[in-house]
Amino acid sequence: MALTGRAGIIGMAVACGLLAAGLAGCGGQGAVSDAEARRQSLELKALLSQERLLPDGFSGPAREAWQSPLAKASSECRAVLDAAMGHPPLRALEGNAAVSFQGDVLGELAAVGMAVYAGGEAEEHLEDMGRAMDGCPVLRGADPTGGTRLRLSELTLPALGDEAVSRQLRGRLNGYPYALDLVLVRQGDRLLSLVHTGLGTVDVRRTVELARAFAGMAR
Image (cartoon, rainbow, N blue to C red; front, side):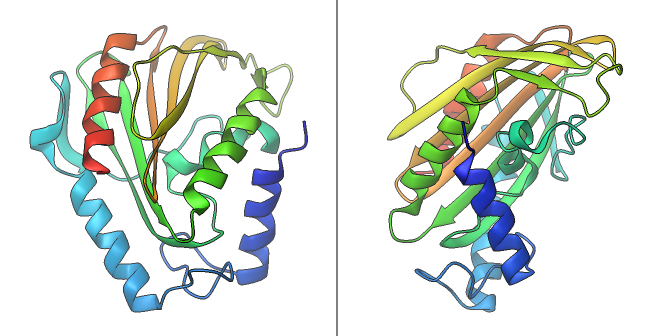
């Protein structure tokens, strides 16, 4: 499948030459001023950083945005992880932030990104990223001999927000057992991206708790 969402991200980033935190004037519709984009982004980061809302087993303070160990994977598959790293689709973006939290299980981490869009674009972007997931059944590293191979499969979760899509990745990262749950939730004009990852496995029940906690913040 052609990942139109990813292509749009790349094209907009090149054309506008902007980082995710300073997106004014890019995307045509719903453009906001630099000051407004910064204000929105700061408010979102403060919202996501509330330690009191974390489920049991995760501790603050909030850390910087997650840096995916899969950054050298093919660009097609990376599209499904970019938003949780603080790089959401740029079209009509009005503000965004991303943070991460340490879990109490060895190697466990929760990464969350939230973006605000104008003109109903949050729904369009969620559809694009859902199609990107469908187009990436297996995620491999840039080096085919490097021992990285993760297979995407369905992840069934309770209803979240106005709509949501989710997948799980299981396999090996650089030869070691690795697991990652990915949840994308739209709540009105906000798009939430959640990654819950760990060595060997992750507890899906904790993924649900995380998703519910952060989806509640998006209201």
